[in-house]
Amino acid sequence: MLSFSIGLILLITFVWGFDVYAHRRPLEDNELLRLAQKRQRNQALIAYRFSRLRFQADLSVKKMMKSEGEFVSCDLDYYHLPAKISALLKYKKHEWIVIAFISQKRAYRLWWNKGPDGKTVWSFLHHHSLRSTIEVLKPDMIAIFHNHPNPDPSRYRMTSPSQADLRSAGLYDKEFGQCGVSLLEFICERGSPHLYYAGFVDRTIPMQTVIREIRQANGKGIFKNYFLRKELKRKTLAEQVPGQNTLYSDSRSADIT
Image 1 (cartoon, rainbow, N blue to C red):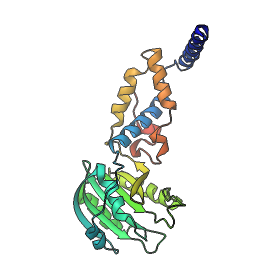
Image 2 (spheres, rainbow, N blue to C red):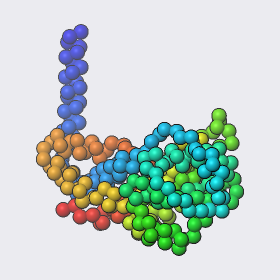
Image 3 (tube, one colour):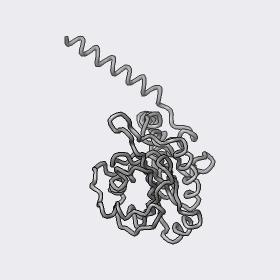
Image 4 (cartoon, rainbow, N blue to C red):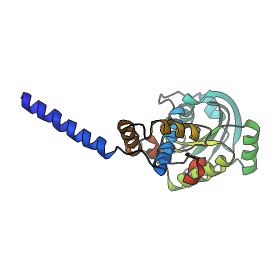
């Protein structure tokens, strides 16, 4: 038994040592940039994590929601915002959209409207009104929520975005990114928020700071190189949530020297 344990330890040590040897080289410039983008995105997603607790919506607020669209003033902590919006949209038989304007992780203004039918929804907020609101409120983040009414919760889960949802998110991401505003998009189902798209501008987590951190470890020893390369390969939230880091989606956009 002792010899078996020793043999197993030696085998594990050999395999791990071979893995370290295989990942011993420093990151090249293109690999360093990819890791920086990945780390930047992960840090931004962590910075905008949100509560999974369920809330009970104020019925008086639900009843006053105008289907044709309206702005509503508020003061809500972002951490609880997705769950509170999901509670408002719970049991809605039509799709609704809610747009939250967020500064320093607090939402100060909401827009909401009902979709034209039970299957689709889009914002009735005209483009110039949306631009004007951004110019006045100067948000650093906009979060967009819409619900997927579920005809049979015992059989179906309505938490996945449609292709139209993803196309719309991509268009908003590009437009907001030009204004220096990040974007988060959620599907709300049965009172729970599901993040399905995230686009971050550079000021959320500055890229040059992330690059500097990686460069301080890169090439400073076999083990540091090993852990950097393993981090680059590891699947994380950065790959699971669609979207982009707006200012550094192209390798030519960042100075890594």
